[in-house]
Image (cartoon, rainbow, N blue to C red; front, side, top):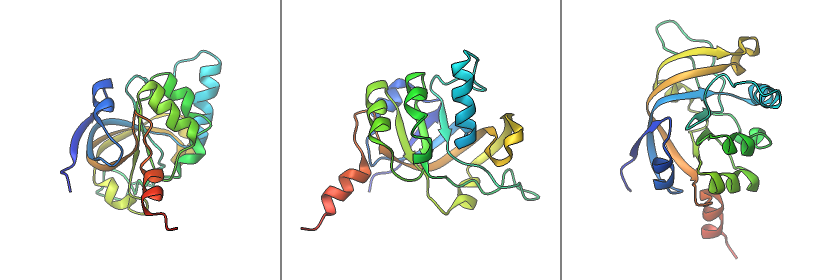
Length: 185
């Protein structure tokens, strides 16, 4: 098994193009949490011509809503949510400069195509291991829509967050490839 690659967010075009479905990565840098309600508000802001709460150029969105922070910890459990719920919004965000998404589960054909057409990647976090993932978070702050509670947009500074590339900028889909490889019959 290959050693994980160290990558830094925001993601450059060069970094995104160098990643392949199946690569293990350790992500450091600044990422943003946003789930369903925050995505809806981002679309509404874009429709009104307003700036988003963070720059999309090179950005990575983590589909997560952290739990309350326990005493002595940086952040509560911060596991991924099902990414497919954001698929209706994602192609538009990718076209506007989003380079990476982190979540769990499969993505729609439209999202995979948007990754290939505009240079973005979808990375999988380990579902059910939010407490472990929280150890990669060095700092966080709520930056928008605090009224959304756990779904508010947060800026996270992460250090060596373990992830796997599922959809790359060439249109590869690790989940589909795995199904074809191990299909019986």
